[in-house]
Amino acid sequence: MTNIDYVKVFESSSAFPRPSSFCPSYGTAGFRADASLLLSTLFRCGLLVAARSLLLGKSCGLMITASHNQVSDNGVKLIEPDGSMLPQDWEPAATALAQCSTDQEVVDSLRSILTTGVSASTLNTPSCEGILSVLFGYDNRPSAPDLLKAAVAGVAALGVQHQDVGFVTTPMMHFVVHQWNSPCRPASTHEAQETYFETLIGAFEQLVEGLPRPPDGGQLLIDCANGVGAHHLVKVQQRLWSAGLQMVLFNTGDGQLNMECGADHVQKERVAPTGFPELKPYSRCCSVDGDADRLVYFTVAGSTSEGTTMLLLDGDKIASLTAAFIKDLLKQLPDSVGSDIKVGVIQTAYANGASTSYVKEQLLLSVECTPTGVKYLHQAAHSYDVGVYWEANGHGTVLFSAELLRRLEKAERVCSAAKDLLLLSKVINQTVGDAFSGILLVEAVLRRKAWSLSQWDGLYQDMPSRQIKLKVADRALITVEDAERKCVTPAGLQKDIDALISEYPAGSRAFVRPSGTEDAVRVYSEAPTQEQANDLACRVGKAVYLQAGGVGPMP
Ligand SMILES: CC(=O)N[C@H]1[C@@H](OP(=O)(O)O)O[C@H](CO)[C@@H](O)[C@@H]1O
Ligand SMILES: [Mg+2]
Image (cartoon, rainbow, N blue to C red; front, top):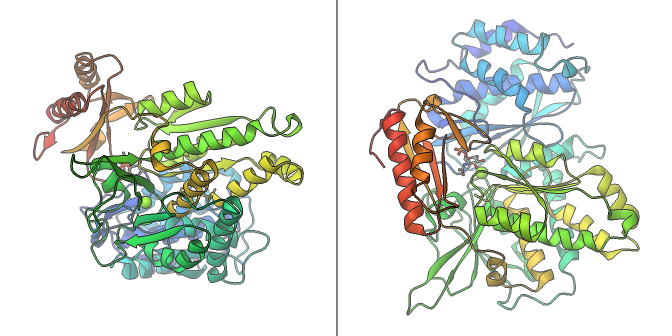
């Protein structure tokens, strides 16, 4: 084990005291808060990720972003050497370290992580400092430079090197960290970013080779949320145009990050983003979030004279399209390659009920429901040969098992479906949900099926739903079970929710859970009509407000 200079850790820590009123905890996707509160958290995450790198003998990553949150927030996501997220059994240690009140507590907490470890299996791995480093990436929030300095100080306190990857999307960062630890490690993080684009775009070009451009000319209007995605999309516009995909970029940085734009806004409010031109019916549009790991498509139906309706093609529709396409390809494999392939679609409680029915009843695939947060979906997806997962908000990907990929590689010369599946596995960023990879995936599948947006939308019709959020004095008092579909405390709240649901037609449902990324409680409802869904959400929101210490306006 490396000799850790705990005196240095103590001294470095003193420059980053935790604000006394701030009690950070590792949430749905790492730490997130108003950026002014986060210096101590970033320093300590620097310590943690360096400790993890030393224990594993490999390079880990740290991404500074608050994704879809407002520009004054920021946050941190920690990345494993294989490009996956921090293992869940490390989250309590991350929270404990972030919450320490004194520098001595920081030292003790770190010592406990490094000596007793949180997972026995990681402890025996030899350290190999010198060849390992921590990789840093960040989005375009103004608070990033100061937070980066704090994180660098944390890594340096453990004597670990670092690499500044620069402005990157979260999924690029996951891919780069994965590459950095692969046997053919790139010469620089810049080269790793080039490999990312080459892998995804190269596979897309092969999937659509020789196919006619879409009937609408291949134009895709993209809302970049004024986030870091625009910075990179602009560089690949020309090349994709040659492959028949004309990306027209909006909200590229001229407005405020995530302000009335971005995937979260479009999905939750069901409106076109600000800064968009008036839409022609069925024109292809999509929206990514601030760190470009979420994607939703949208368009309008109807004529301008009669008024248009916004159509949202969310994560559930992307998952359904993808699962349907993969299922078709798998059917074409010879029995020797593909008779026993286990395919699963993983969703959360927010998945629209119509999508769940479509996957189960039309595609005849199994559906699994996990708690909110891609860390849960990603883990569940690993237990299938093909694990398709998306959150309704557009965050998701597909995992192909190593065994299936081996079988496909053997068959690709003689079987075009095997070749296509292998290309799909490259277009898809398997480390994490990725908006850019999602765009290439959707565009390739639509082109292969010669489908318009309206045909894709017609896979199934969404059940009307409503999502609202409200504030309570302490959202930790609301606890949930059964993949967040049932409320355990406050006692009696679930009984009230059940009684409300029973007043609506069969098939209606509603649930409540505390957000892991915002100081808010979320209520979700589904019912046969939009009015009923709105009404149910509002009434459940009121019950939560009254029983769980609501503050501010009552829903
Ligand atoms: C209902 C909803 O959209 N929740 C989002 C949101 O989590 P909350 O814990 O609900 O705040 O942010 C997460 C991170 O981006 C994302 O994984 C999740 O799906
Ligand atoms: Mg995001």
